[in-house]
Length: 88
View (spheres, one colour):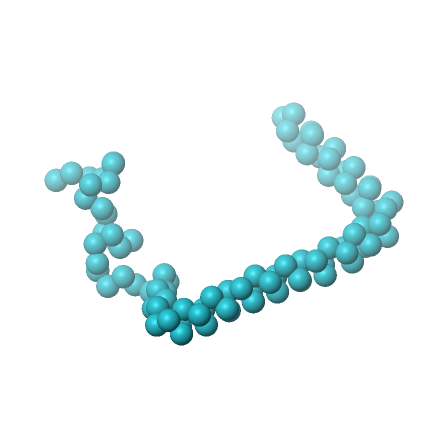
């Protein structure tokens, strides 16, 4: 019950602060959004460089979303030595 009351008070104070200091919030977002885009660009650039470098070396990439083809350890089959697995 105390968590609900605290949550409602925090929500009310947050909404009040957002309405009173709206332009400060906007200025903060105007500063954070470009920094976020720059960081996102560096991550995308790094991922692209690594992918090109791996393709040049002939390293195969593994797509984790594909089915494993019934190999041991796939999601559909339990691992026999895993703790808590069913023993027959």
